[in-house]
Amino acid sequence: MSTSTPSDQPRASVLVINSGSSSIKYQLVTPDDGRAVASGLVEQIGESTGAVKHVAHGVTTRRELPVPDHAEGLRIVLGLFEEIGPDLSAAHVVAVGHRVVQGGARFDGPVRVDAKVERDIDELSPLAPLHNPANLTGIRVAQALLPDVPHVAVFDTAFFHHLPAAAATYAIDIEVATKYRVRRYGAHGTSHQYVSDKVARVLGRPLEELNQIVLHLGNGASASAVRGGVAVETSMGMTPLEGLVMGTRSGDLDPAVLFHLHRNAGMSVEELDDLLNRRSGIKGLSGVNDFRALHELVEKGDAGARLALDVYLHRLRKYVGAYYAVLGGVDVITFTAGVGENDDVVRAGALCGLEGMGIVIDHERNAGRKSEPTVISADGSRVTVMVVPTNEELAIARQSVEVVGA
Picture 1 (cartoon, one colour):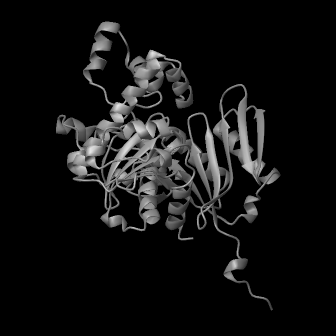
Picture 2: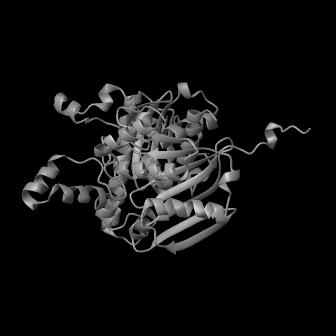
Picture 3: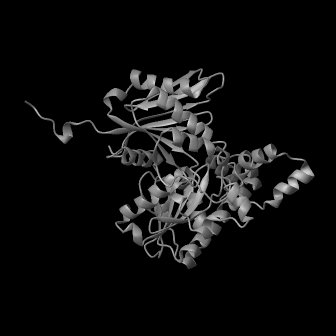
């Protein structure tokens, strides 16, 4: 009689789902080795024609077809796994991990989804009206289509759940703040936690001994101050609108600007929401929100593009200085996400002029895109500067495995 060994067993995998208002992003991940076995994206859900991309076995399959709702979108995804592979029934899927943006003050870590968790996510929707309803839709649809696999919710806010009260509290009437749950929740927490842990492993230093600043720079952008693996400050606030300048979001703004525009321009709450979330940031100043296009405009002498880049870099430097003070000194500053990993102009500009704080970039090391963890600071720099690619899907997969005990 033959017996199986651990190497004979299929690797456990997790199907990670990020359900947006009109999209579904997914990955099939093997958490032990960090490999993305397959991935894909369903876009333009609810429009006349949807766009579907499925990547597996080194081949990208693209299709255009109607995707009327998320249920049909996930059915298409499961159909592609069955048609093209890999076969989910043979992939030893131990959990489905769902990204959820807002966990409020209730969730300080990942949880297995049950009826109460669903109600809580729904009840927290006023704090993330663009995200939580879509996240919950994805959970419910996936549960219906994959009922025999445990589902896990992983919250963007969890890493910042235990911010010090001085960092989490806004200076408004405490009764109003308490009643309406107004506080700093942060976002991108899964990425900030993954990157700060990865930095310690790459450098071979105890996480507990490091003061870190993590700069997650994508279309959305956020900064965090992490002491000994614990977040003590972050730039995003009650919503992802606060903080750094972003692709289409304003970041920090005098609240009285809203009163002024309402009283003098007659702008409604909905119009102000649209202005600050979709027509501001880099796009609002330059007309583009892709940094490749922005740099092209700067090279052509476009004044609006130059101003947009200067404002973006100024805000970054301001946060680095502020978090240096909050931490009382910094060991490592790390860039991550799409802009942070790929844009050497932004990385150099963000830290330009901070040599007096012991932050010195080596321009040769900094040059180009980085697909692996890379030290870009000069040998004499007191502060180590790094680029570490983020992997939120892997982080969600590993947290999901911990929750289900697989």
